[in-house]
Structure formats: structure tokens, C-alpha cells
View 1 (cartoon, rainbow, N blue to C red):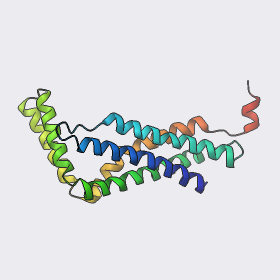
View 2: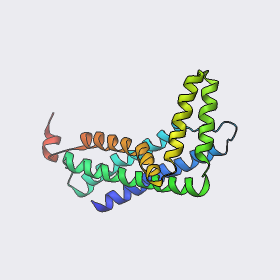
View 3: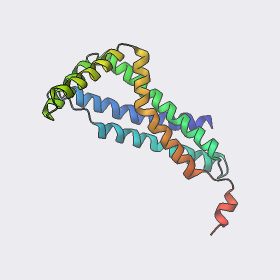
View 4: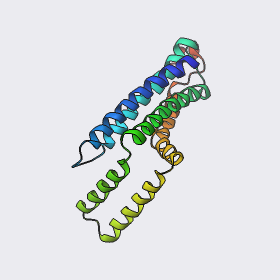
Length: 180
């Protein structure tokens, strides 16, 4: 079980971190727009977390005689998602602290500029600015950066692990193949 979790967790982690680094690089180097791509980010997470499903299925078929309980399937999926999410957080910390320490300033400028383009009122714009100042303040603490970054990715991993465990659970291989 450990080999499956480590293998598929590492593959998922490589995919999600590569997509994040690419997306951040594109966003950060497009100084006029500085528009983060939520689509690329979440697509990368979904592609990476497909390995939760593949990992659970691999364990069920290769190492568990075609059967797996919901609990074991969910545990495997959760651990794969946790490894991938941890890799994502570690790479973001390295990326943020060593390569783009002014990310929050640029992101804040982007959000305010976008709010103005959308025609937000002065009061709405102030709410946005206050919210961004709060995030900027939070980003001064590495612990909060870690928690915020985990909150971006881990919930999706948990949902994918849950869905995968529900789909892949199989109590008895013989009974599932004889049912009509």
C-alpha cells in the first residue's frame, strides 16, 4: 500500500506543481495583465488528482485481489492527495519566498485594477482593498501561507478521494462479476 501511495502521490504532486509553476510564471511575467489563470490552476489540480482514482484502482487490482473497502480506498486516496498537496505547498513556499516575494503586491494591484475595470463603486473597491490588505498581512506569516495554500488544493483532493472511493469500493470480486 505504501508503494502505491508514494508512487501516485509523487506523480500527482509533480503534475500539480509543474502546472502551478508554469501558471505562476506566465502570470508573473505578464506584468501588464498579471491575470492568474484559475482555469489552468484547477485543471492542473484535476489532472493531478486523477491519479488518486488511478492509484486506488491500481492498489485494488494489483495488490488486493480486485476488492477494496470504502475505508481503505478513501485512506489511500486521501494520502495520495495529501502527498500531492504537500508538494504543491512546498513548491509554492519556495517559489514565493525565493523567486516572487512581491507577488502579493502585484496580485493586489491586479485585483484593484480589475475592480475598477468592472466598475465597482468606491465603497466596493474599498472592501476589495481591505480584503487584499488582510491577505497581504496574512502572507507575512509562513504558517498562514501554508494554511492558505493547503486550503486551495486539499479540499479538492479530499472530494476526489471520496468520489473515487465510492466508485471503486468492491467487497467481493466474485459477487460483482456474477450480478446482472
